[in-house]
Picture (cartoon, rainbow, N blue to C red):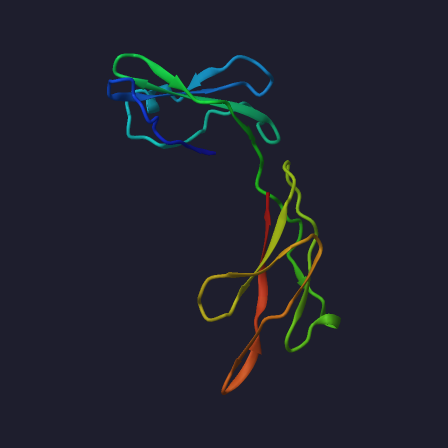
Length: 170
């Protein structure tokens, strides 16, 4: 997980020396400093990828605090940041097209709900036009079924674009 911040507006009359990052254990314990050697003497850092998390963190709520320290050893401390650590959503099967509801101008896509330690808040249906480009999001919203109307026509003919990717968003 990556945390980002902005420098304090006032360094207390001294230059900014660096930062100290603190995390609790996710069980209401005391805050401990993490990644000390990465942050202590670098005042230019404004984001950092945290790898020091409790064992089995998925679904766990942890708290972070950041101290900005000046060269006079004075500091200002941030408010606590609450973060629930989650895993990437898992979809058990690939989406399928319902042949009874698919026509030359629409595709009915059926998929199973994804699982995650966090609540799934949205799904996106992404399509590839088959011409070597990337995927583009064409629908998003509720669980279960999407009817996607996406028709590509040219002066020499037309073809139906098809979906190959489903993204669950936590």
